[in-house]
Image (cartoon, rainbow, N blue to C red; front, side, top):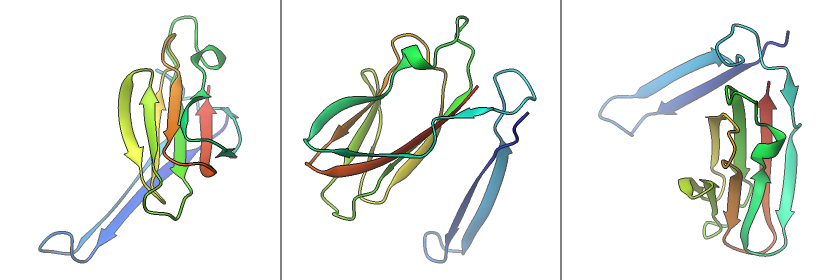
Length: 134
């Protein structure tokens, strides 16, 4: 059994009236279990030659028969140009837009009809990605 932990730490001295500092950690488990996620796509980097939409993770590669998966997805816009963004969608549902240097980490079940897609705003953009799966 693999043990994988995810931690997020946020610090700011001027976001609120008082200094803000917190950190939280969780262990990544399979759905409805206390068994750790055991597989990964590996850290990948894709350079998109043209602006537009493409499928990053296809549900057919990650779907369970009963739809009970607890995959975790990491996506980052590696651009340093402030005008270059990456729109993240699960089919038609927009999750958010990653501006230069932004990243996201979220759970995904991989149900049929839930491909994860990226839409790049410019040519030659680099998107970093990984899925940790069951």
